[in-house]
Length: 341
Image (cartoon, rainbow, N blue to C red):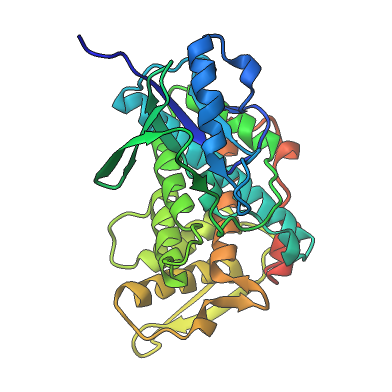
């Protein structure tokens, strides 16, 4: 006779209030919510296995539930993918909005957290037991009990501030239920995963890695086709969607012998430069770290965050998901800081 196990997914290092994205519910762990006494007893002990840098149980454990807070059945591959996509969207919303706030206030000290705090763990368990097995990569380690194992908070958690624009959250939830917008929906879900990967900050992540990850997110969300001049396509797309009116214009010569000339907004030309930087990375060129700086403390990947965020908002508005133009996040202060307007 097989043993019926349960499953829980959680974000151990993320403190938040209730947020729903599609069928996913993210909620701060609350022992009173759990109805089954054996499940409650197990989970009360399990969440205490997650400790801070002082080896004390963290108070930041958030649960990721599928449709219902008391649903602890093992998820299908499709259900787990939906939960994971929702986590990626949550990461994007938090980092994008907090970055916008920091830039608008010209204050790097109120920057966003890293995506490391959006690490999501899924754990199978048998209510009424003390046993726990841990899988990391391809290795599963068993013969552990809840009182003998601890999981420590990573050092690479980034900034302490977290904000989400409620209007954008509401618009994305509307998009997820909307018929006829499947292409945009799929592009948002897939690009947000690359956005999350671009914001990892553990010691093995190179700044050059972040450039490639954000450029990949751009290829998806800007719907860049397999054309010869992808930098030009991205640049023109930025000019058509984000930098339409009121942006400073610049004329550049380009090509092998500077035989070509074109006038674009400086924002659009930034898109050109960013994609060329991506090309230099993937082709193994020698890139000084100074080339990753846009100005002062602002890196090109921070600028990329804002362009990604602004384009998502544009697409949400075009799809009829934003309540009205007055509910859009304000990017004028950010673009002014970039000296684009």
